[in-house]
Image (cartoon, rainbow, N blue to C red; front, side, top):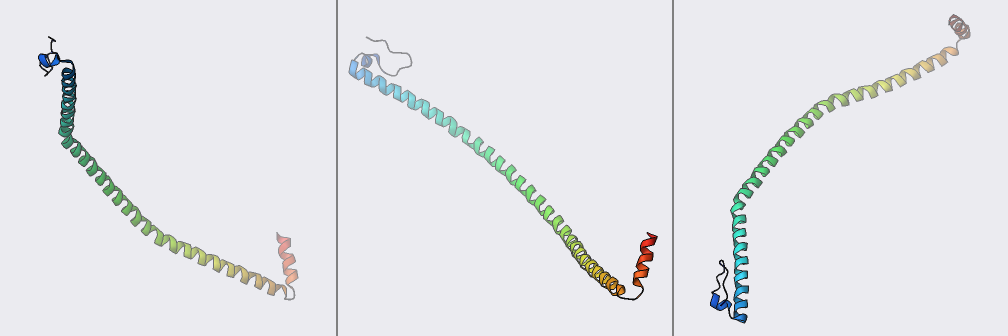
Length: 132
């Protein structure tokens, strides 16, 4: 008679019959594998609540970060709005000043041209160049 292993559920008498014994041993191995699989699944299912809590905590931190980013973007947008108004006014004033300078330069050039037509202007021009 074959001696059964201590952890086997197969009776030693059944193990002694070759064909039936092999089938029963195979079934026993499969049952052990299934039991190990079930135990592993039970451990994983037991860890699931902690995993969900960890995920929820991470999601909460993510939402807080998004909230902080949203507040920062809002502050940046407000500051930008406060700066763009005055900058646009300055740019308009600069553009207006450039137009006024161009008009003034044109007026001066026309005035010099008109003065150049007057008698005696050539003498004044020579005297001015002599002083320089």
